[in-house]
Length: 357
Image (cartoon, rainbow, N blue to C red; front, side, top):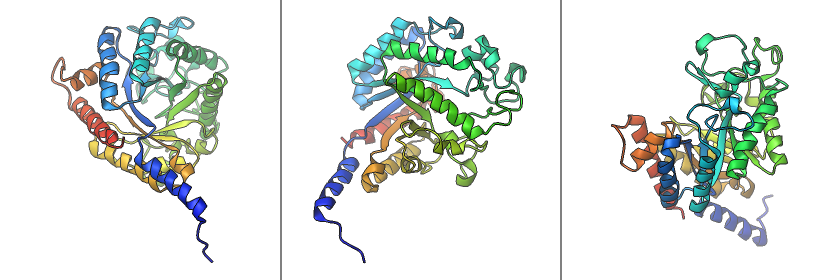
């Protein structure tokens, strides 16, 4: 027999769902590469002028090793931001009512093309594939070994310094597109379960931040089964890391990026107990469909699941200067197609987000 829900229960439930559906999303964010030192005036202008105008309330700033670290100066890249410059960006965010979340890519993305980045350049002993792949030929990106007994001493110093400089309460660890993990070339990781290795690194970073009262954000691709979903090995995992979803704490915020199609995976993360943000790039149709999915679950899901669908994070991936100068219609040269598309996607997505206020 089907029983009618008591009126006293039904009314608050409907109100909660309607409020979630109709109100502004908690996260209305943009992800940008950190500006170069000579782009600081442009960065301050964009944060203080453009972000409030567009309705942005979160800025994920990808710093990586482009910061003048004091405690671990060997990891700093050339042309890095100073502490004073990073503090200036943080001050501009506070003035604009924007939550700043610094990002340093952890685990994977320790190189690009022939360039090995600061951590492994300074500490080659941390490499997951030590001595292999000269000039990074034959691989996508290098990884560090998560089981190296010294690696976290260095990483946590880097994280803490950036967090202290900005006063941020959340940190983004990246951790996307990790292909080198549990490699036979690593004496510590060889033969280990890759999901457990991935989850262990998430747990270690999360625990360090939690002890400081801070929150962890990561990209979500390694936590999706690429074979079962048919999404493939880039936006999802085909190297055994997906079971880590059941091993990591549910207070980690998942950033669910998809750029070519609006795969309905955000609800999968929310149903698994995680707060989730959908992240498009340069296709307006994908961004708006992801937003529709977000609104649909917030409107029709249970209050618990609806509350975990946090919002949107527009990614850029074209460099800070090209994106921002094109946004202001002041490009130094003819912008690449991807720059124009990313700016247009940002404008259209946030026009729709503002309509929800």
